[in-house]
Length: 375
Length: 90
View 1: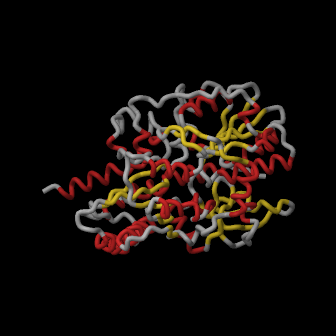
View 2: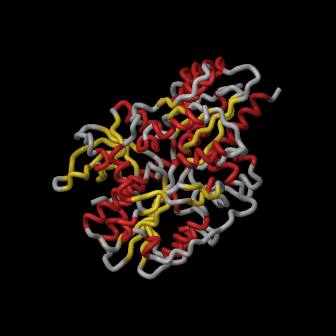
View 3: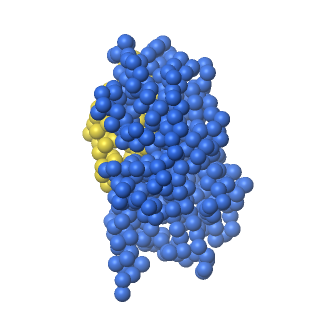
């Protein structure tokens, strides 16, 4: 194994790698899932897999909110944006995500009024400035962004704003993790818990993983050393036969999360009975919709949303990648038909998608590994 | 959108207690601090910002480390900063 010296504190990384290696039982293979796309990005960017013994495989999870939006929801949003007097507003990350008839960017090029915003509060401002228009915010993301949508709806309600609404696509991480745990395709040994989602939900929601499934969870920070330290904490639990929830990122993540944020979500949104995830199919109670009391801000009620269901392109294996069954480079179209410039699947769109992260950085890692093992 | 970016609280907006001006890598913009109402930050303190909302308080050391990490990420952070620069929260 050869090491890359790409980041500061490489010495500490080597020391952690040695401690991790010492914890490996001879002959045992370990599969650890990093749930969050931000972690995937760090792992590839810094070649962290090169630091780990071959017995440990990192499996990339479904924690990239852009990646799990099904094509049908993109088509629905574009249909909604094309309604009279609508201004659709969206985070930049969403603009290139392909629907079955193109992306937001494509629709914008055809003349549909779709605008990029940094924050839902910017959408609110567009609504205030354009009283004759109906401004819709394309709400996406896990529990990290759901509080901002909730707070924005509360603000709109306080102001009595009548021309602002939310097309709600917020998803929740716990049911996705449970779906993966219940999937027969994959046997995992432990989880690196998401960092920023946990600042909102805290660490308690992961306790079922340790208690009911006997798998350790370590909530992890985003820097290379955070991830290696968290892998060490997982391996130590496995070596000692423990399965607990631990918090490596306690300098940012409080054990109980952000109570104000949870309250705002609970006030304005409720769980849907089910929601379609790209590649993972329908998962019950896995997404949020606008609560009835806030119906006047619910774009799904204000507009006729087609409710399009579109099968993923046959060639695309995002589902397998999102479940961690396939590594990005094992997908049939990876790097050939599907690239960040012309993505077929969502995993290639977001910089946090496993495919884009691997495309941008990981290929170098594999090349280095091949060079290192060449006689 | 997914990146949590550190910002230093500069001042509160006079008649809007939920809004504060912050400094992110030299860019000064207004964000909402309503999610920290249980323990509001003071000017000079650092917060981690997601899509215009401060989600948690962090110390100066963590802010510096997070910033250095983000600057190393490249394009994704540049895109986030560019989006923040366009933002005009009121």
